[in-house]
Length: 201
Image (tube, rainbow, N blue to C red; front, side, top):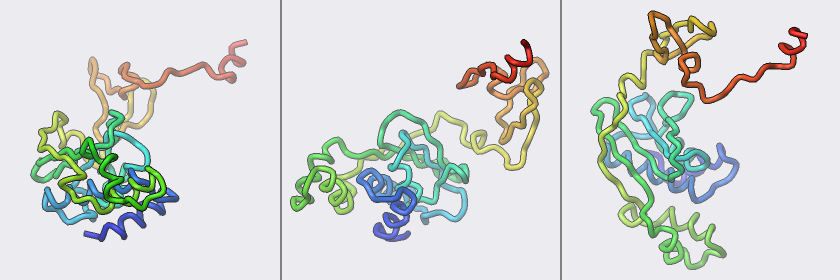
C-alpha cells in the first residue's frame, strides 16, 4: 500500500489540486484495503468500486485503489452521497464505507490552526483515526457481479440501429438483438438534425 501522502499527490495531479473530498476518497480506499485484506492499489481487476457520487471524491478512491472507469473497475451510482461500496470479485465480500456524520465538526478539533472550515477539513481528514472518520457496513450486492463484469471481447450488433454492443449489454427481444436504447431504455431522445430537415424540404 502506498502512503497517504503518495496517494494524495497522485490524486492531486489528476484533479489539479487537493481538496477534502479527495482525502476522504483516499482514506476510504485505504480502509477498504485493510478490511478486505487486499494489496492496493491493485494491478489486476479483483476489486470493484461503486461510488455514490462523482467529482473529486472519485479521484481519491482511484488513486488509493487503482479502480478506474476506464479499467471497468469503478462504477458511478449517483446517489449524491460521499460513500462507496468496495467488492472483492473473487470472494464477493462487499463493504460500504461513508464518513461518520460528525466529521465536519470534528475537523476543527483536529486542525485548530486552520484558517477556515475548508482547510480544517483538508488537514484533519488526513489525521483523524479511521474509527472516528469512517463508518462501515458489510453488505450484499443486489447486482449480479459476474454479469456486470461481462466477458471482455464479446461484441454483437444491434439489429435496429446497427451500432456495436460490448460486454454483453444487449437485450434479446422477439429473437432480435437490441441495444438498450433501441429496447426503450435510452437516457436521451434523438432530435432531427438540420441536415435531415433540409433533405426533406
